[in-house]
Image (tube, rainbow, N blue to C red):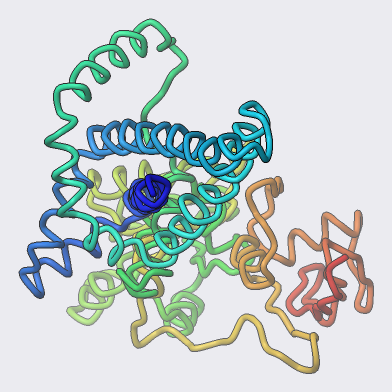
Length: 424
């Protein structure tokens, strides 16, 4: 009854095939940070071995592939011998037919039980699977070490020949963003940490014009204003620093530090804003935030005037505005809590015209990667889309949104209504 021995050997080989196939998927999917946390919390020897194997994945993969190929080759050979014994030797079919039947049968059997099922199991819970197979896999790595060393040497030599100047092993920004999303989904980091990391990634790509207080919203003092007018402007401002200009807001001559100025006036000194001006720093609208932050810190200033391509004043940006792009909103006693987006009906929202355009895209789940527009706010974007002076009630379609102008202040859009339509 030698065929019984063949059957037992065949089943054992299929089990080994399942072991190698599952190990391959488990260690290609395992989360090292989660394994480290398990090891730190439990001191598990399985987790420690799994971490070692994951750290030496190239060697482990070579051992897995060598083992899997040897096992599948042996399974194919034994299967052929088994079918010849059962079919050809009994005269049921010829040897060639028996071999063909054997090939079909072992292929299906190994595909289901030696490949698909173990890979699905490993993919579903890679951490537990990798820990459970760590001891035998470590043993196979030791057994196959001489062969693996030769294979790694050959692969290393060939890869040097194949490698071109265009090959780049660096991790891209998209890769990092995807990693952050993955570890958040897996519970390794919380949502706040994920948002902070994503902000750090986006920070170098943001230009100052995207976060400015626009010209029309700037509070500024005309240096030639009367004492009463200047005090009225100061009292209406929630800021500690105010730009001062001559003739036009395009000609800003300095920044007035209110605390210093008011103390001097209270002490009886001359009421002349020109005597208390801090130097003004200008940034072109395309200056990226890291550069803007660096220049503000170097000059020990808290505010910069942002200019357009013609040298005119486009708006202003503060140190706080820049830092908020990294850490989120920084609230102080002068800030008013306002909802930029308010739900007013089913799939219907009211939006502040000053809402930053990229915040708007994120709010309504629109991909901003290919969005190309110089406008910093939703209101500015709407004016450009309408192609002329806006009027209340005008509307246009953008992606799956219908955007309608609700309110204006002079020619400036202050409120819009957004209807979210079903995506095609």
